[in-house]
Image (cartoon, rainbow, N blue to C red; front, side, top):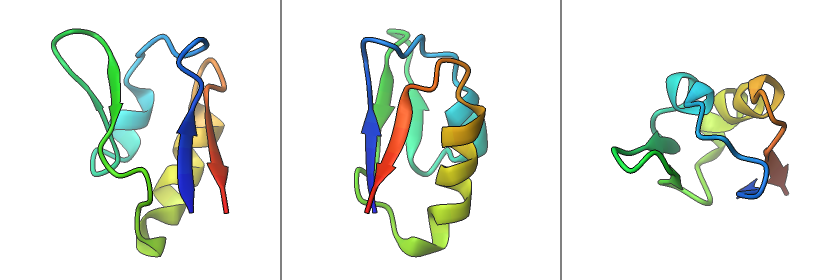
Length: 63
């Protein structure tokens, strides 16, 4: 699994960070950072929820 973020769409709302803080982080500079581009399978459910709940649909998963 690979996490892909479309930074042109991303508004750094931090919804993903609240769901999967192991994978996503919005820092003081108000930019989203992907902490684990290839997170382990045990985080798949959280990452999938972040994909669905992203307000701008800026996150996707590639298998």
